[in-house]
Image 1 (cartoon, rainbow, N blue to C red):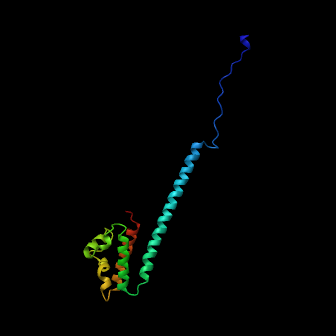
Image 2: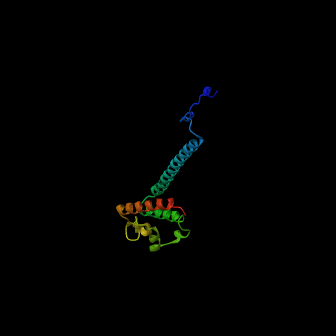
Length: 149
């Protein structure tokens, strides 16, 4: 009777198919997609906010008639934006105000940005000096508006 018993080798089951993936891979794919979409939305939001900030500065300056009034409006915008950094920064005056505005990339204390303080009170201001001061004010305005407390 033992001769009738035929033994066969162990059969392995077939390998699992690559499709559909396991649930963990679906979760990983969904997480990657959500992260990418979130980063893209965040960058789009920042770009729009940056464009709105530039448009606000440019439209406000465009309403001024002459160089002293453009400098006055730039100073007003800088003072409004400075409150985002410090509550009492808009009350600074003179060199203290210029030192607050100074950063390594801008030149307010010893440069063309000094016109932001006293350019509005001058009768005549050179157009090239005004434009340089406005460019510095615009750059600093954007930096102040995009800064978080």
